Image 1 (cartoon, one colour):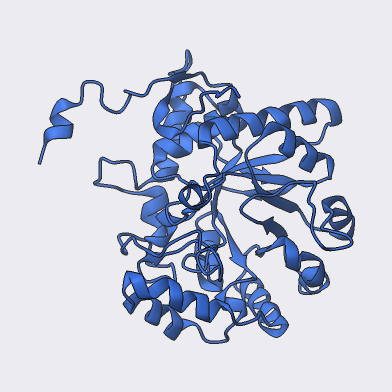
Image 2 (cartoon, helix red, strand yellow; image 1 turned 135 degrees about the horizontal axis):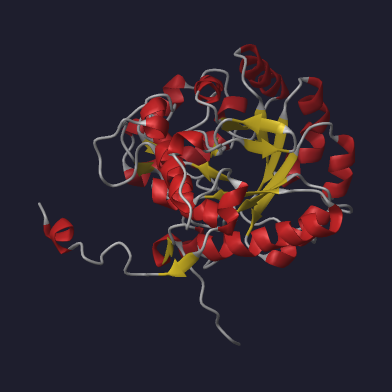
Length: 373
C-alpha cells in the first residue's frame, strides 16, 4: 500500500493573480443545470438549519436552501416544541432523545405541505431524500412542483450492492425527472465520473468534514476537502470536454470562513454547501444548536449535537458588515475580494487560480496575533 498526501483547507493558499479586478465588477452567479442563483451558497439539508421559512430567507439573499424530506419537518406537523426540547437537553441526553423522535416515519401529507409552503413563499424548492426513499417519493415530488432534487447519503456510488432486487439507478431516476438532480456524497475521480455518466446534474463532495459529523472518528472514512474537490473537479472537466455537459461540483462540509469558500472555488468547486455557519444565524430553526443527519441512527450514531450559539443573521453572515477578523462573517464579500485579487471575472475563472502547499500560511509572521489576549 502506498499512501498519498491529501490536503485540507489549512494546508493550502491561493496565489495572487497577475491581473486584478475591482470586487464590485466580478460575477458570483452560480448556474445549476440552467437554474441560476446570485451567490454560490447552499444551506445543508439539516433539520437545525433548513425550515420552509429559512428557505425563503436564504432565497432573498440569493442562495439556495435544501429541505430534508427524511427529517423532522416531514415527520411532525408542529416542530417548535421539539426543537425547544432538543436545545434544553444535556449532551448525554440529546442523542438518545433524537434517536427516539427520528424513529417516527415520514408522512406524505407533510411532504406535500412543506413543498407547498416553500413554493408559496416564492422560493426555489430544493428537497433532499435518502437513496432508499427516492423511488417511492419521486412521483409526489414531481406532482408538488419541487424545483431541484438532492439524493444524499454519507457515501454515494453509481454501483451499489444490497438485498434489493434492483437498487437505485440514477440514470433511470434522471429519465423520470424534469428537474435537476444532484447526488452525493463522494470524494474520488472515478466515482464522480461514473455518477456523471448516469446523467446527474451536480455532485456533492465531502465525506465526514462537517462540524457535527463524527464519521471520520466512528468509521475512519474521509478525504480532506481540497484534495477531494480537485479530484472530482478533474472528472467534471474531462467529462465536459468529452460530452459537452457541464456538471456542477459542490464542496459540502467543513467550511468555516471566507477563506475556505475561496479555496473551495480555486480547487474547482462551482458552489459550496454549508451547515454550521448557517446554524448560527437567527433565521435557523435549531436555536443555536446543530446536528448531523446521521446523528439519530439507531445502531451507530455518526454525529453529535453541537452548541454553536446564535451569533448573527443571514445578511451579515453573507454580506457583512463584520467587525470580526477571523473570516467567519461576510462570506460573499470575501469571495468577491478574492476573485478580484486573482483576476477572476466569474466563478469558473477561479478554477484557473494557482494554489500552493502552505501549512504555515495562517501562522507565518502572526506571533502577536497568536499571543494576543
